[in-house]
Image (cartoon, rainbow, N blue to C red; front, side):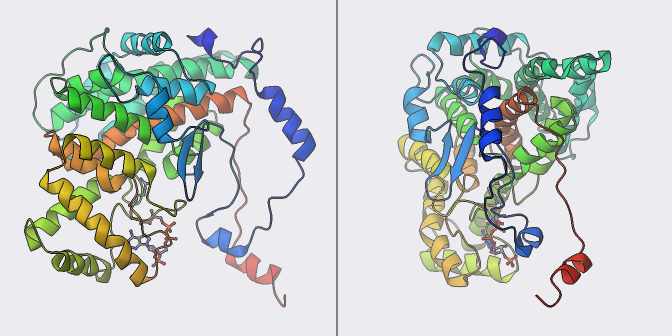
Length: 435
Ligand code: AMX
């Protein structure tokens, strides 16, 4: 597999010369002004990063190597009898820019299954965690502990050349992705008292195995949901908190386990990946306050009470998007196909018809439309995965695909240590005094 990826010096697709040419021709050209608001405003919109794997357009949403979600659903290989894309194919696409053949996808499933076992001490570490420790904290602990066996850290300590970094990072990233189902499965079973983690089946695909370890592989629709879920949550260009954290930490040449553990800690925040847990908590609270089958008026009143309480409506708004997230639409279409009459899905739809109007009227949020997290929980709940605190772990399994692809490319392209400049407010005052 290693030989199939187009990073090595012999490949015609190797983009290293292309990057050199871009820098030689355009290196000193400006994107436009940096204004003081960029510094105080969370760097929103500041051009600062390179990532070829996916690009986010404010109106259209995400494209993975130029392909929209519906295009990926059409073009990427499926499991026999399945209709959702296999995330193996998406990883291949992110990494190489090419749609793999079904056989290449199968080879990746086999490779990951062969690497899936986690060290015994990591199993013990997870078994010792109190069940009250949030699943995301357990997830991050376990991923960071995998650094014990990092090929990159070992090779670096032995003094490899810079040119060899990417190959070892590639090995670690493949291990990282492969081991996540066993970590995620163990956390799920430990926290919710669901018994021993079953074994990975080396003949099955990644999503089937993840579903199997969670105890849902008997339900083919749930397995299909996992395939769609991992595909659409994998990557969202380079600047979101988890992707950027992974890249930043990786730039210090911390190995992929340390870098992805850090990324997971960012994903665990309520304004980022934890929003999928927050959405379900919020919907359940709404139901207990205004009942099921509530009127539009009652829902409106509840949304306003959330805003008046100084809280955000979880699952709505986005730092980049200005339209309904296509990841939301893909999940809505899945729900229309598989669970059109589910009461919670109906509530999600009702909320969709009400919240944007209220956020527009409230006048603060730049984007009143739903994001990916507004819809994922209802799908998981429908199939019986109703442990809301666990939801972000599944997001974390998926996001590894994008962060891993980025880490491999960053080391292949020789990306330097990230080190932007910070200023004090005093410096800003004196810099612009009288101007
Ligand atoms: N409900 C209420 N207020 C909201 C809001 C929402 N859903 N979205 C934005 N706002 C508010 C902001 O809190 C901010 O208020 P302030 O001026 O008092 O600080 C104001 O509107 C302007 O914010 P913005 O420029 O529109 O958004 P942002 O880029 O600063 O933040 C995000 C983006 C996602 C953090 C924000 O929309 C939010 O908090 N949404 C709810 C949480 C959520 O769904 N997060 C998941 C995002 C997707 C993901 O990463 N998984």
